[in-house]
Length: 426
Image 1 (cartoon, rainbow, N blue to C red):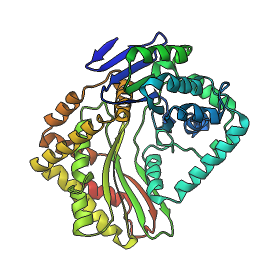
Image 2 (image 1 turned 45 degrees about the vertical axis):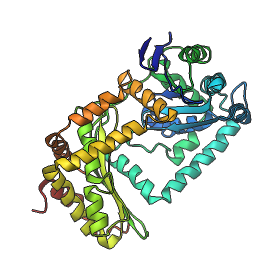
Image 3 (image 1 turned 90 degrees about the vertical axis):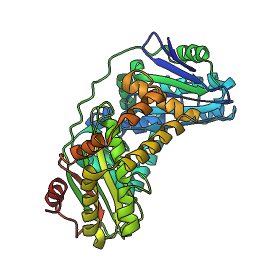
């Protein structure tokens, strides 16, 4: 067992990790089970299965009906939720500290003893098909899905988390059981709790409710290979939704923090370069955003906005010029401001039990340990202007990804955009 201040970590006999952090002033406890398996772990015929499993977890076990799952948590004033990501799935709850055994009993039940009833599965397939259809009606959400598909073509990393209608319709209880048996290995599962919590009590409950999971070696992930390219979907919309993507960094890459800071300077706030140039000076978009999404072995950097079709040429000119200029002229005042914003974000995540359990789980799954906040802050503080400019310049070396939806007749060719990114207006 290892500890850091009010944090304690224990690895059970089957490889499952339990991490807790005591927050003496908090009456409640946030807790969750995080599984290092998500959409990226799916085989081609399983596309969307991780998300369906998350839904089906609440549809009944051998001991509890779907209603009983909800009532057992809500009878003690708690709530329960789940989420599916590219590389993880989480099942979380919030209760009073005295009711942590209730929450872990329910979470253990839904993760180790779900029945996957065929009638419930049929209903949930219908729900997810509606969810998929709704995304098609929201181009600002759809365009980021399209970006990932284009940047990482033919790979699980690039597939949409919700799946495709044809795969969702094909899922069976046996497919769910096979995926869980293969991917939900205790070695890649972390139970985290923060708030009014006693570590020994959580460890004891984890042994009772999860100790029966047998250790095994799940499938290894295929490496994520950024390719770039373009996808254009002409739609009769009022706006064109655009994302320009570039090859980013993994969260283990030495340039990860510099790339995060570069994204913040470029388009992460109201004072950022893109916001000032695109929104404030020219009024080309209601909002414009630069983002960096890291994964375990790769990443993607993007710039996205919704603009009028007639404004696309000017938007691209301004955006590309601003991106290139930032790699050359980003200054100390911008870096200082971005560092301050990132430090506030890091500290703000520590102010709630929910933020703490997510931080612990993600870091344990990524690095096998919890990184103290002051160490993260130190990494951010150590960055200088040249490092951040270099991280931005590195982005420009990759072949771009273009995702565009709407009235996009005035959009440049991908080759022209790539040339502008690499060489400027010339």
